Length: 305
Length: 305
Image 1: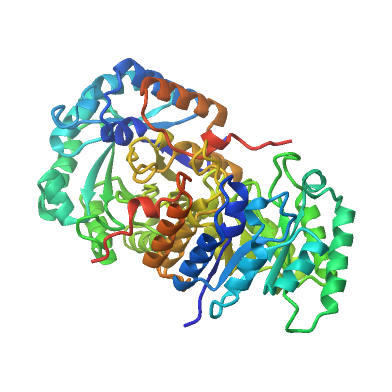
Image 2: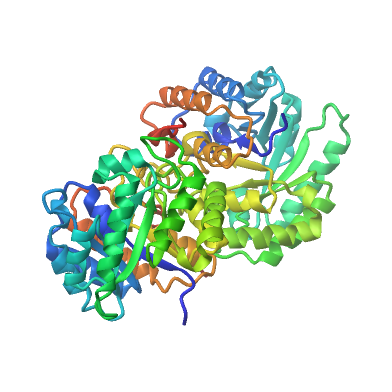
């Protein structure tokens, strides 16, 4: 049966990079295997950044190698630049995403690159990918980070995001990802912004969205995303990465709650919720004391008969 | 300026009835005054049930009397039966809501009345209201409780809810309120169910919805509610009434988060968010140790310039 909506699990990357504990490699493998067993077809398993910067993800090559053994799983990674991309390709990732912050202030602070510098880097990435065989070449995505607003710059002009999306597509990027990195987005903005980008780049180029739940709007935004036509949504098991001092306040949208939202609406995600909750238990065990978020896990699945 | 969406604060009733602490009368008054000052035009201030059952709300008549002094405020209360309605009218409430559980099992367990018994009670209420002058007569609402599912019965057939809504309207009720008492609802169901009721009763008879956030779907449901045409939504400050052992798991949707969702979408609620957060601080002070929920209060309002 065809899946209606793909939930892309990003906890092993976006979640783990945001917490202090370093999850052992075998626990990461067990986590990824458990979500694969629960029906996930795509997991972002790590990031190819210098291990000094993110020791939590230093074992990404090993994790990619393991994840590739899971039948049918699309193994995704994040890379900040060409160097990371080369490592991702060497490791055999099926999909790479480069974050490109729509806030230039954030971009300079985060990866020390202006917008012009980032566009050059993306061009270098595209050139490198052109040298690969079809089998070697991963899907090349660029995430329009902080597209809904930035904690440093405040509001981000929509026309800037639309313009950057168009430039990125012209560089040969396969896919643009709309990313509410900071949890600034609202459903009306989401609809307007997505429509603008689709008008310029075509709807096929942007099917994926990355949402946070900073102000509790995550699932409302997810609903609007699905309504306007996004077919892939990032989410993090237990909302891992949320700030422990402000429960739930800054993590990704919670995979379990998103899966329940979509499934209860009759949209097929391919996910077995019971098995997903089992994966959550396993992750909690591997991260003792780490707060996990989400309402479905607390309330349980509703009575069905 | 006309308000687009009315947020009806139900914390002093639905919130306080669900917690053990009894808030002192003067603190309730300060709370209600603070939300009135923040722009709220309607607050459900209490419930006329026997004080033995809900000592938390024993001072409702006094609270109604105070709330009526606040300029322009619609003072709403919940009543379970004719006796409660008579007390509400004597106290001067502007609006009364009788909950009518679509789950007969829940109805019998909660108010010891079958559906037939409840319909008789509602008829008695309508007859009593007919004896009043226009000035004495409150708006008479009936909440279709557990309309989305019941923790005792499980799923509730949609045609039953539609049929009951029609019968209630024929009895002379001014307004039907769609209520997801148990947090079972999803946006697709909400749209389908509301459309069904509107098809039978007319859209003007049901403009109000009462949502819970049990499985984290509260704001997604709220978004759908606004999209399909509801113009009044119940919410509770700090989600008061959520179970302390499962943070956020069973309370009403959080007023602050709902207000932010709507305002950020450009919908006017008439609410001053800064003043609302001040009211929250005041309530926290009056309920020491009581967990308050909500993401906006934790994350703060976003940078705007």
